[in-house]
Image (tube, rainbow, N blue to C red):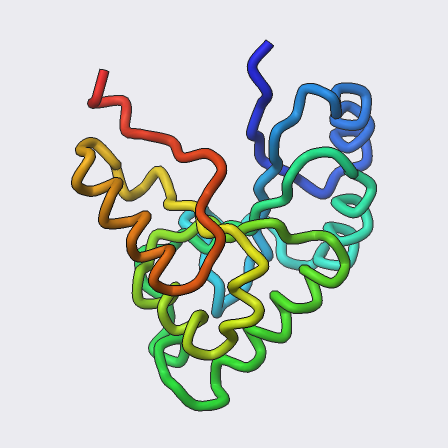
Length: 166
């Protein structure tokens, strides 16, 4: 059976279900609902960050991908000064706690800013192009892989191509 890549929601019953089927999970993706690392989805609840960490940490097998797939981020993310430090600190904490294997992105400028600010950090995490890129041509895929490699991230183990390719 094909391993699944599914959203992670900090809910006790949902976690129990995932733990029962953990052997079928390739990855989970989650949002921090953070104003500097934007997710492309609606913010449902940002009061449960600690619960997210506690529950997500119980999953051992699947990779854990942070959603930072907003198409544009606040301008502070693109600056080369210490304004990006809170984002880098958060990512380092997640990596240290084994809650981060990769970053799902849709903003190339944000990816480059992170690489400039923390090259040793990005060398430890995958950069996964968001489905929002609508990768429907080999040239687009090649450009994204080049962007990832040039910024020092780990190449993604899996990429979702646009259904228009079918």
